[in-house]
Image (cartoon, rainbow, N blue to C red; front, side, top):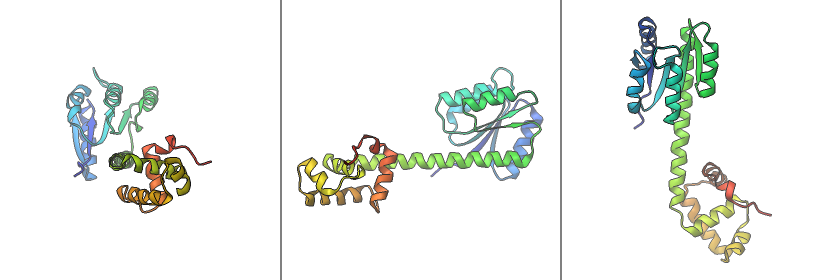
Length: 210
């Protein structure tokens, strides 16, 4: 079961933090707030999915520090940076590091919610692609060496006769292997097979037909 996304709010300003928490909860989002960047980093290993909203200027551990740590840990979780007047340079730095978005104070409530929902949608799409990629690799691992060779021939655009010649087997045997590949990969068509091969990087190694 996928985890429910949590919005992690980090701001040392009590009023701003509480206001954000109220706004997000009103929008039926699950919120967890932190009074400092250090407090959040201590909890970072337990964080799984959702979106981080962090003020850029905080004592000791800044929003940039938080963003850097998230990137270093290779966490697939979007970060929205909140900046005050005159912090545009920091906001641009944050975007270069990998922030999903930045908002200037005072910001419009609808703008914040739109940014959060956009970040959650992008994270969900990324998680879906990651799961699909893992599933494809599991299916590829279940293929025999000969089935893998036939698959590479197919996605390279080679007809059965050419694959048969290359592998030193009969075209009829290629057809049997091809059927096995389609079944094991759960592909409904050759285009499905090509799409999966592209995701797995097989097309980069398969030699095109001449």
